[in-house]
Amino acid sequence: MLDLLQRLGRAALGFFRRLGRGNLFLLQTLASMPGMLLRPGLVVRQMWSVGVLTLVIIVVSALFVGMVMGLQGYNTLVDFGAEESLGILVALSLVRELGPVVTALLFAGRAGSALTAEIGLMKATEQLSGMEMMAVDPVQRVIAPRFLAAFLAMPLLAAIFSAVGVFGGYLVGVGLLGVDDGAFWSQMQGKVDFYDDILNGIIKSIVFGFVAGWIALYEGYDAVPTAEGVSQATTRTVVHSALVVLGLDFVLTALMFGG
Amino acid sequence: MNTRTVEIGVGLFVAAGCAALFVLAMQVSNLTTLGSSGGYRLTANFENIGGLKVRSPVTVSGVRVGRVESINYDLHTFQAVVTMNIEDRYKGFPEDTSASIFTAGLLGEQYVALEPGGSMTSLTDGGHIQLTQSALVLEQLIGQFLYSMAGKKPDGGTANHVENQTLGQPEPAPAPQPGQ
Image 1 (cartoon, chains in turn brown, green):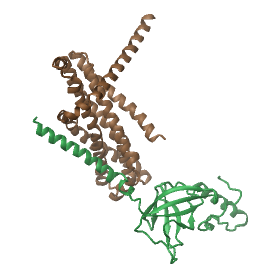
Image 2 (cartoon, chains in turn orange, yellow; image 1 turned 90 degrees about the vertical axis):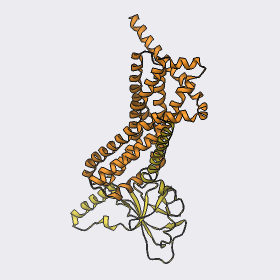
Image 3 (spheres, chains in turn red, blue; image 1 turned 30 degrees about the vertical axis):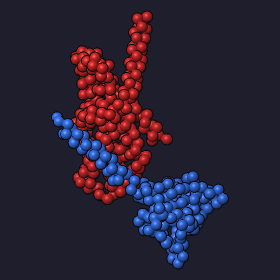
Image 4 (cartoon, rainbow over the protein chains, first blue to last red; image 1 turned 90 degrees about the horizontal axis):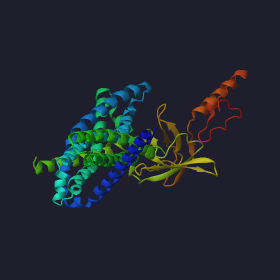
């Protein structure tokens, strides 16, 4: 009985210890942000690996998500003779939800896991300690540019996802199923509000980029420096990012559209 | 991977992201029609505006000429006051223009339809539209229909209250209203 209680207590303490380390890590990263203004080259190189290399999976999945939504939405809406509303359906669901959320999930899988593995391996091969020996702050040199790149890349990726997804819905709806071209766009423009829908979607994606970058970098930085530890950290990055993104999405949606 | 390729790639990525945002703003959302705050205002009193909302369209012969700017309730006349913003290029509707609230399609959103009259003087900024027709509320319609059906039976007369509605003030509904 007491053993059970002790195990519970140890798990809880471990959880809070990790949470605290994570927050300290975040503060340390944010504190070294100003230094990044002097070294934009580092951020650009990370934008390449975090943003540009993620672009392919984002564009392809956005196209297919939009096309599937066009197809499914049409099949439902045509029963009510409201197939012209397809544009609203596709655009609103992409801009408000699917754009930020699916982008964040793909981002965690494609870029977040790579970040964790990279930093975990750096730690395992003692490159980070080597930097400290040379009086180079690893947080400033390694972590901060990656964090900033993730933070900047996410909204751009989400915007691209939404735009390509709407185009995919247009291809299927107008090109394949014969929804009227003008009605598709004009109804969409009538219902989608720039501030309420698009800006809120962008805010969501900024939050997700912040969280996904934080989790990925922290898991790598905090990984047990062995092969097994790095692999576990990579798994945790994907799982935790997905859970946190989906949970936060509910909270943000309730705040933005619930009232 | 040399630095030049990386930088060009990132540049393209950022440009594509901004372009996507631009497309979303211009093509998908209503930002293009949002900024046209220029125009002149007309007000109209309605008995019942149904589901009319701020930013609902205002049309003439099906052409959108403006948007509903605000909706208030007047405690003196006990009517809803709808303020419409009409674009400047559609100036000069006659004074006896009438405004009605219609529904686009069976389940669509509601909009204000203006119908120009024949007067020589025209409405200017802040003008008030006298002739209005309220939104059709389905429950009210069914109630009136049931009442007229009930009224028909005993004497076979034609108590067609539904058609009797004049423009502007819908008849105060007769006292016993089934279905309400």
